[in-house]
Structures are given as C-alpha cells and as structure tokens.
Length: 124
Image (cartoon, rainbow, N blue to C red):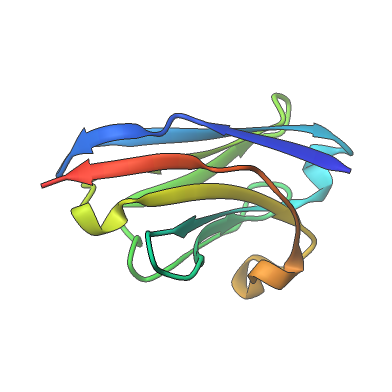
C-alpha cells in the first residue's frame, strides 16, 4: 500500500504560480512512477505530468508543456508540481498518483494509488 497526500493548492490569479506537493508513505517511494492528474468541474480526469522512478525522465500533457514542471525527492518521499503562467483553464482538483508504468504511457488505469486531491483555482 502507498498513501499519498497532496498539498499546496489554493486561489491564484492568472499568470501566477503555485507549487503542489505530494507526500508518500508506505512502500518504497523510489520504486514507483509518480504522476499528476487533474479533474475540472464537469470534465473527466486527465493526465498532467509523470516522472520516472529515478527522476531522470519526465513527460507532460501538451496543455501544460513549458509551464509546469514535475520533480521528485526520493529522500523525502515527495513529488512536486511547479505550475507557472497559470490560466483559468488550469482550474481543477489536482491528484497525485503512483504506479508502475513508463512515463510515456501513464493512464488512470495504470496508476494503482491515488491521493484525495487538492483544489487549484485560477481567477481571470
């Protein structure tokens, strides 16, 4: 079992920045691919970013490429999502997830563990 707890969400103006954190406990953190997904009101959950076990490889959705950066600190069992140049369409609940998948083929089904999410609201 892996327990995931997200933090760092909040209200920010368009163009601003936020950094989300996800603290993991349970099975060895460094053995999981970590990812971020988001779900906007009335929409399906969608992939945002993923990072490999070592942190050497990352993968992003086209909608956030160049604005968001995923990173991890295996010594602290934590994964981060730095979000810059935020847009109103980035408003969503952001979920941290862990699984065993190559970063390029991360899907909801391949992520076995999920946090409860943190709300990010971007005002125009």
